[in-house]
Length: 133
Image (cartoon, helix red, strand yellow):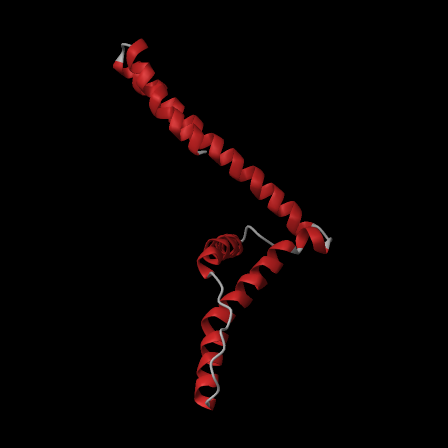
């Protein structure tokens, strides 16, 4: 998508050199921008069709990857924000030396979890509108 957006500016600049009519230039520039939006929309529709086919699959390996990523993110966040701090506190309160507990880089998990939750909210939106079964 970004490649198309990066090409629109230079192509519109070329229009300035070859097309003298301002209305015609505006019309062509609008068509170029609309073409990029339509392309992005078609890509999104294709991805939604693939996601739907994955979700309908009875195979665990095909339909179960999304829940496994969700659970992995949930467990990693639970460890980072709940379990690790309480373990550190527990060791300190009990008088034991605090071991070096492993830490997880949760900044890499947030985009993944956000995408999964975004997809889930679209499903909720469909259910509220009566589109989904």
